[in-house]
Image (spheres, rainbow, N blue to C red):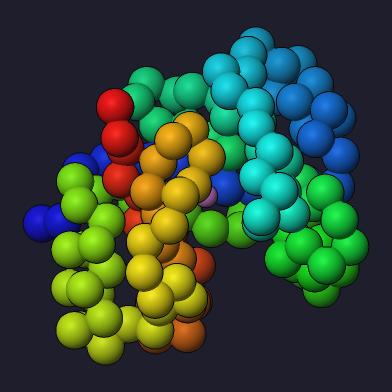
Length: 135
Ligand code: CO
């Protein structure tokens, strides 16, 4: 079994501050980490739940994948981050099993992680992100 934890559930939102306020009002949730990943055109806020996160994700520019997603589908579930010990090995294993990688090689993610995305086509309609923590 390659997966060690649900790293995060990512939700695409139009307004990050409004989404944070919703989670605070609904659950008393506090933001554990907030980061802009300029290369991906996203700003995200992470709310910690046990050893996993809810990742509220907003677009920082119109050509961001999140902006395109919001335009097409509206706000909602965007992807699931599965935590693995070794992102490169997990990616290779998935590709060997027929998965379509979006990232041919692991790359830096938020929180200092190493990540790789797998296309939903061939993965039961789910955009999967493999997440390796580098603590
Ligand atoms: Co993610």
